[in-house]
Length: 126
Image 1 (cartoon, rainbow, N blue to C red):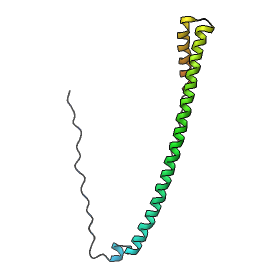
Image 2: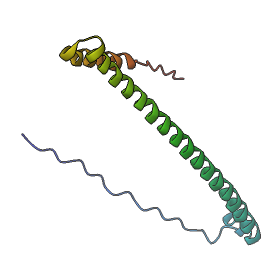
Image 3: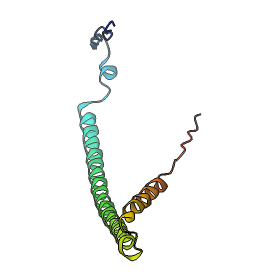
Image 4: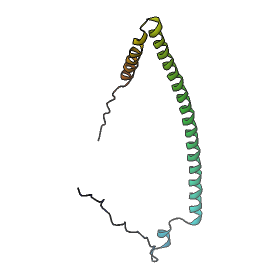
């Protein structure tokens, strides 16, 4: 069997822009230094607002994630406790004895299978 090597591409050409000295200054440099500094300050202010907003979003996401992880842990512990109680009841209360283990495994399998739902995603393309 022949091993195929990956195709190689030639390197991309390096693009260099030269300012034409015959171009008028107002076309080559559309802003004077004062306008450029004002624009830079405006961009810095907008960036600071964006950065603060991103920090607030991250903090809110952290709190929500912390809450839902705790909620999931409590819910998982409750389900585990219910399964243990059901197993104990099957073992002692009903008197299934050793048959309680396969019955409990069947109940867990039924819960696991019943929990999965297929979600059909329909995309509408224009």
